[in-house]
Length: 418
Image 1 (tube, rainbow, N blue to C red):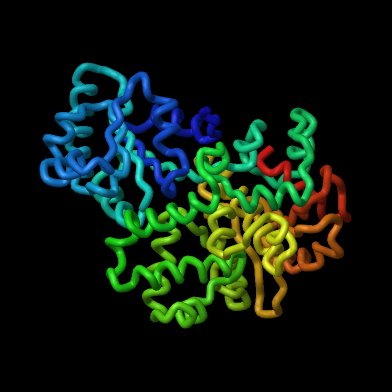
Image 2: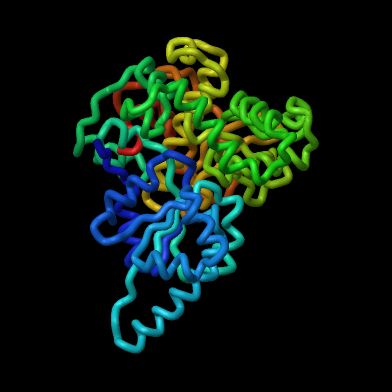
């Protein structure tokens, strides 16, 4: 049974503005299924996982496009980047026809890719100004639990209004950790596949299809170890030398492999907020897995109960919250890198998340407990910036939004996305 995705509206909106769309996202998160749901009545679909189609696309891109005329969805475009120049030519030719006949522009090509690492330069060179780029992720908790998702805001008044408009059942901390353990992959959430079997296959498929061309054959075992070691560091600052030493690779290779994970949508690197005080800010990004189920599998936690009680439980809760917010940004075609940061200085004062816009800074702390002690103690460090500091949030497992003190509100984790 198809589960509606919040990103559908963004895809439809962008399709009105560009003759081509590129939809990025990790493997098996539902890109093709979503596009088929939206466009199946008007678009043909061809996948470059098919070896015959892939060979033709690589060897004779023009003939491939002639045999698969627009409007068409081309799945796994990174397997035949040779198509990009041919698509550019087709678009430019059709633009002249539309202009000559006074016709409205239409969407011609929708391309999906599971590895941005190989594609981003080709997209920039060949399709600049001709395509809209959208990032997609696995299910958010709003999608899994089927409540209406809205663009993320840290503004308390807006959040209170949204809570009044729709009732979302409370979920206990144990229920939240069950969701953290499961993750958001569609095949697991819809009970198509068993979790452990699925993730074992997923990791192998990811390395075989997305990574193998980017690393030497002798490094495959090291790369598997690398992913697991990175998973153990979710919600931590990135120390390249430490990770490199743990895996047995050099720092340059470590940075390249992290870049592969990031552009594949497996991890997200949250940047520190620096402004004019950069000389006192720790400049390393913080690393988060985008699917907590995959992260828990790689860390070998056997069940939700142990995950909730383990030494990494706080890191997993923080990863869940940050990834949910990032997924929300992607669903509404907003760039999280324009708004989301973390704070930490050389005095070890840290704030988990900052939402920063032109007017103000909204501090956000993330705590797995209920009514944690003095979670806003570091909010005052933000006063040094020449921006208004708005009321902050403490995201935890409480049941409802309520004031915590003069500068913050507690916000229930189960309402993220509301």
